[in-house]
Picture 1 (cartoon, each protein chain N blue to C red):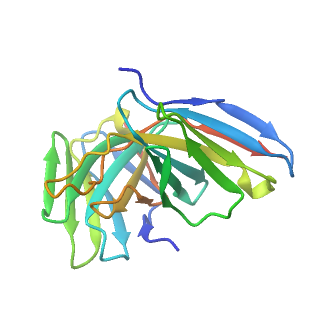
Picture 2 (picture 1 turned 120 degrees about the vertical axis):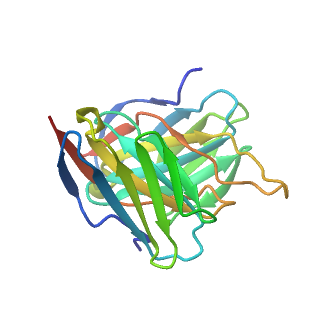
Length: 120
Length: 112
């Protein structure tokens, strides 16, 4: 089974521009989460999409947005880029299993290789 | 707001010895914890997890210990191997929520 893929792998932009990153989850996975990794900050949760709807959102400004398509592929968009947006952006997919009560449970997330964004 | 903390940015151990990576969290509502390993130029890969109803989970050379009263978990690797050299992230979440909070990571170096 193919893993999570992300495109592009590397990107260089200038301040003020906008960027769109793409993520294709593992086949059958319906949940896609996005994370930002910067040195010393670890991975910070951006948002999670499930069934084309944003289900969870981290503490990032509105310049960061995303969407999910019917085939579970997801895109993340950052508008008006700032120097501090330079980071590795990781997406992760998961099955979205449900517990006995029917409520969603925490799944093991499988990460893609990331997109390295550099803002000049 | 760093709810999950890994206070040691790096750790170096000799091959064959035990590696102990530590993680602290502040949110007592977290009830599911995971460890991920990350090699350069790759995304994190899942290693081992533990739910709050347990205090220990073992998988081969890897054991995770959870101390809920201290809000502390640790990952033990015994025996350590040079191939274990990587950055290790701990993560925590609520059991019904995929919003995981990660620590900043600890770089483990296992010397031959």
